[in-house]
Image (cartoon, rainbow over all chains, first blue to last red; front, side, top):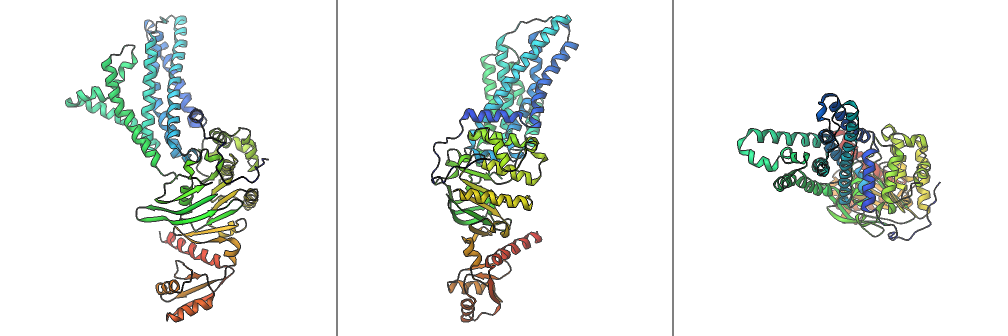
Length: 260
Length: 299
């Protein structure tokens, strides 16, 4: 049984400050993994990275079984799931209607959103650590089973990979924030870049703009250790369209939306 | 502790809440009564900063909700017991809220115990909960931050008679310790047993408010005329406080004698004139509800 304090004065309890941003980030991190769906998604990210390395051990020729190759190959499938993580962290509040509690406890909604973005970014960075770990295990096994097992690694690539996965999770979060609906955001985030990619490959006049706006083209150099200033600037421009704009519009939408 | 002033919410031209004002003092339970769709939930969401009012203000402890430093420690809110993640356990739901508010995690089992959710139930996913269990979880969530104000929307929904009795005791106790409770219901009988004050809302407007005893005992008069519009005008002109029901009848806060005289002076044909009896409020409430359910039936 709990006891209540005695008759209090009718003023706000200033001695009880609101949650710090760090605390909110902690809460949002926990939310990523405290539901069945969330646990499965996180587990899939780890499993899929491990599965890719296993496939390489089985099917790639011995000389190709290096740490760098294992690592690079594990990035792409993880990159498919990270947008879903970004989307769900935002849209689950609306589809499960937990926004009612979340925003009643933290009425300054922008703080919740910033905390969510920080949480999914941390998850994206953690996924790079998972990729490094499975690549290390793969390299060890390759050494035993007769593969090259080379440990040569340019650590710039790890940095690029972190940027790569961070962008992927933010694209998802941006679409989630913009559309506030799980299936719609997942389908759109998968379909729109693909359609844009097909169109720009098909239509001559779009070749030029695509080099600046098609993320499958602008993000590609991140999968290698070398990136030129030109590549960075093209990446930046494409991110304005695919990350910054959805996040900005979605933020405004979320702040104004009525919570039912 | 709660002050609602001229709160209005329009969706397009249609006002869902129309110039609603009331106050809830510390140490009291206020019943917020009205048929479904009367504007209770919209008013409560505006009070809790979840819906922006078109005009008007609402404050808790003298401040707009959104400006409370740590709202969960001031106001316990339960607006919809179904609005919980079905894949999360009850205990985890509370733990997240405790972390957010900065409440010690030890309080989680304590409030679970207080609302009668045993440890086995607490570990289960909310998706497996009955509506009654969700209401208990929602109440636990509201009590978690040891607030001094409770805002509860239809908390008795889905509770069995024993659960309703238990909840009344809990709310009464909360108010007797100096807390402020605002709870809504579409059933007069449900809040009658626990409320000190009543605010009755219909069609987005406050149609009656005051102390429960005063309202329930209030000698009202039920009057009906062949021309309801003329009756309305006549009553207004005579300075008689009247509330129109959807079926053309009016509940007037005056003696039948005064009402009959006013009608006679205006040459109106009355089809019904009688004391609404001790159930003046009930009559008023029934007229409101009848109107609303007629609308629902037509839809």
